[in-house]
Amino acid sequence: MGDELQGQTVVVIGGSAGIGLETARQARAAGAAVILTGRDPERLKAAAAEVGATGVVSFDANDSRELESFFAGLGGPIDHVMATAGGPYYAALADIDFDEARRALQEHPMLMVGVARFAKVRPGGSLTFMGGTGGRRPDRGIGITSAMTVALPALAASLALEVAPVRLNLIAAGFVDTPLSASLLGDQLEERRTELRTTLPIGRVVQPDDVAALAVHLMTNTALTGATYDIDGGQSLLR
Image (tube, rainbow, N blue to C red; front, side):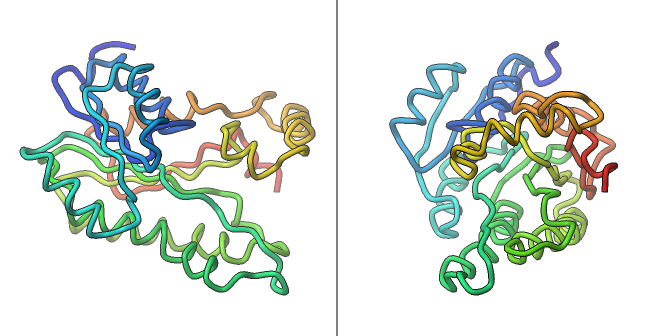
């Protein structure tokens, strides 16, 4: 890792674990000052110590008022924001919790809208968001996630026009071996890892550092905006 982000400030929303934490680590290695946010103060404190973050702020990024207050409190312009907060919602039609489904439907798009609206990013800086690829193929129990999978690229493209000359991109990840994946799969995690190692064209499971490397590239390559970048180890080629 070079010094591509030397002298710049990167905010990572959802930076206490997984992809967010690894993005913070790689941004620091590239010379950036890093500010981590998340809901759990203790996890944030540990993550900040691990990567050498310059600041941590604990708040709920899905509360628009708290999000606005956070960015207002930063003072001057920042250079990049990476937002990884939120997760998928899976449930068969008969088992859907309507309140949870409504939360899931608005969580990712409204976080994108909120960050795009409130983040004071210098011209040429970037906003990067996490989406997914898992809901592109219809199946039972993934309807809510499928809706988000389809909606987020269109939202990202439109928002990129509105925030220009700030750049805005979306990362669409397949399975990534994170603590969130472990919590969703439980005792089926190792079976899933084995399946992917034997079927993916890359012959291994995608890791958080793979996604983080893409996120840092999107920060540093100033020609990229308004696009969705898949990172799934070639899984989409198998369908």
